Length: 274
Length: 285
Image (cartoon, chains in turn orange, green):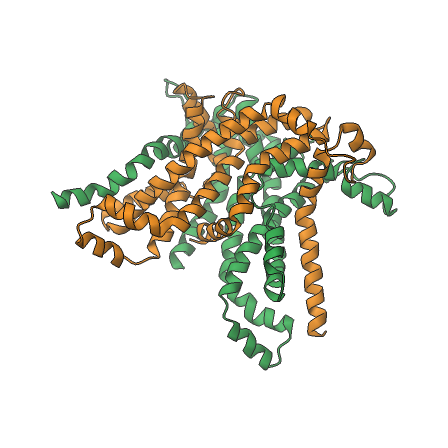
């Protein structure tokens, strides 16, 4: 086969992959703009006119405004805490070589890759015993804890890769440890911090199991758990409404991906491969 | 003074995370092991063998284990193969790389809960995309019930692959970009065709990425919950039950926390050999 033929085949293959990737999203957007009757008449085509009633209904009656607000609270507080403190911890553990450092690092890495499926029941029992079940504080603590290992691992992988000379010269100039972190490490780590922040936002936003396990009512329920209940009730009866809910739930993470897709992909590569 | 400070600095700087991480992740992990053996509460009551008895006589466990197994195998190999092909194609084409990359990766930040909801209308027996297309082309007379007991687990796997292959593509693309272009040049000078180049240059250099991905996917597949919970809740019957969904129902439907922990422990035991293997590999790399 000629090189040109191979090239045409390659583009064709990629076109199929693109269609496979994008079709469900596009259909969901189309469906979300229809009424239920319109969907049954015309399940595949474009909506006759753009109605956003389903979005409004999901947002208000479906209580998505509560779930989304909750998830914005968890990501808004959890992501900065994880970013800042994992940087500080990873910095100390990487730069000070002692027995204590290596013990602490191993403790941090114990939780790496452990899915919530392995511990959600005792977590719920514990929060119950502490009267933190179904509270914002309880959910927030669960989300921070679930992402500590990954954050510390991510920051140490990044920090291990760059030279100490700059810090040393800053120290000679009389900078304290916190000063070094503030004036040298944080600026140098900015790209890694952006990647980590985007990844953590998506992890926390997209979590389902922890959200289901540690909430009992709508008060503190995060978005995906809220969506799961909504889907359980409306999933079989009103596809357009569910589609609007799906788009609403996915939108913040999607927008973040569209804005930061380079950082996001770079972060995934660093985070996955170390 | 300085010495003492730097000795405890790692602890001091780790403390803010430790006070959240230890009680709300490490302790619950220990709890999973503990409550598989003893009853929660004040009195020490050894219930491990009760749980084992229940586990052995629980027919759903067999179904869940076999579903987990199917899930692991297909989630491991299919996305890796598709990702390998997609990444090679993206690396191969001279123009339009970034747009294809952007579009193909679109599912990556979408939550599995949402992915499940997006695919349900596609699988719908009467109004779904696949059935409509197949019917209008005359390939079928009767709708295919994708979420029937026989087909459901496979239908869910297709969705899982949809969500997963962009990720494998990303990793492969990153590894491909590290391969020096001189290698390809010299292969072309030697008269190697596209397939030969792929088999003898690309594939061997991607080997670390492949084995890494297989292990990563395996670890994540053992604990699968979100997608199955949204799409079928482990049903119809228990046709799509996996250990994760069964543990969840034991805990929050039947309120048998101890037994739920035992199932979680079973997940951990299934994962353990791979986790250890991965640690060894990591150290070697």
